[in-house]
Amino acid sequence: MALIVQKYGGTSVGTVEKIKTVAEKVKRFQANGDQVIVVVSAMSGETNRLLGLAAEVDETSPSPREMDVLVTTGEQVTIALLSMALHKIGVDARSYTGSQVRILTDHSHMKARIKRIDDERIRKDLDAGRVVVVAGFQGVDTDGNITTLGRGGSDTTAVALAAALKADECQIYTDVDGVYTTDPRVEPKARKLDRITFEEMLEMASLGSKVLQIRSVEFAGKYNVPLRVLSSFEEGEGTLITFEDTGVEQAKISGIAFSRDEAKLTIKGVPDEPGVAYKILGPIADANIEVDMIVQNISKDGTTDFTFTVHRNDYERAAAILTELTSTLGGEEIDGDDKIVKVSLVGVGMRSHAGIASTMFETLAREGINIRLISTSEIKVSVVVDEKYLELAVRSLHEAFNLAQDEVATVG
Ligand code: ASP
Ligand code: MG
Image (cartoon, rainbow, N blue to C red):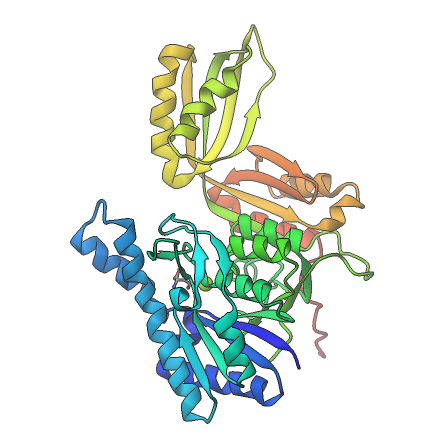
């Protein structure tokens, strides 16, 4: 008998019909002798609808506490409907909101972190042969306030429950059948991966591959939760997220991630002296703007150019801060571009294979794509290129690293 945590995303519970389909699926697992905890998201579009209502009431600063009270209703609907659907087909089931389970979080509304999970009620139900249905994305703080875990947070609820109850597997059911070498909407030849390591998945998620909430991957890695991403609509093994590469010869590259939301800023001619990076990035950090890549040029005549990238939404604000800095710091001018994207090769195979970066640069050069910035880590090479080259860059790299599906032989 296995203990399985299953999470169904918004599209998987988007209609009453789909909720009934999920119930049938859950029933099959239970009939198999498994104990099942189900975590659900709100029906697709519902969280956005609720956020829209809030914006109609107060566009600028609705209370974060009340926002959480509002948006958690989405998941309260689906846990009840799914439990009813299970009853209807003869499965004993019980639903719980985050605060009923007691998924205890810190106090940060709309981006709370889980501190502890009381597993007593869940255990009792499981032992009594019930399916336990838990609302994703929500918890409660020590003062009894309802909290939420950030958009996409149901993934994290599922992983946290799996960790707390030492589940045998945490299955994330979604509208794709696994993790792909890249986004199939950009490269139709993208191939589903049977397995990917945690480190790679973390990079893919942080670089914009939206299959899993990044925090859920961090959580799973930290607590060794076996995680699998699979389709709610089709049969299949999905993608298993593993803790290490297992014997099989590791491909050099597992995937190509990209992010469209990038912008870069350069402050030119700043004095090349101790403390400059701090003087520039300090005010940026104080404004709560996250910086990704940072490049400082070799100095010429005692001055240097300093470049960094930020999320596109923060571009205007960051530019304004820099402009103000030039008066005190003595930079010459600010240069910026918010029509850039980041494309990254990800793979633990990079550790043992040389020449990945040069193949990448050669491929981009052949396509006439100018690289604006480069950064590397042990298992990743990222480049910033003009937005208009995104598709071309992804497809040519996909080809160069042989990531496509095995060619189907056609008989002429
Ligand atoms: N319903 C929430 C959202 O849309 C949480 C989730 O779906 O994971 O972000
Ligand atoms: Mg989601």
